[in-house]
Length: 85
Image (cartoon, rainbow, N blue to C red; front, side):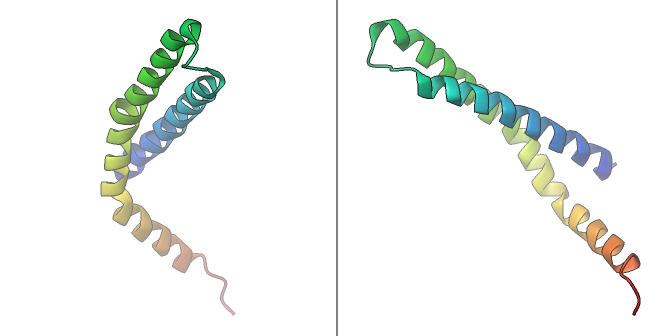
């Protein structure tokens, strides 16, 4: 099961990172000192917060927990596929 969970975690992390990237780029285009951009900047900042700490964080925690198993499996595969020579 760690492989399936880890695959989902990786996929969700990549998806969340793409969403955060888009919101951050939008935020950087805003000038929160301008009255007509304050609400847009605040909305984008709020969306970044949600994606970082509601969506992304739990997947990072799960992945960190599974990491020793992932690393061990990678090591196992590397040893079994190492060219003899």
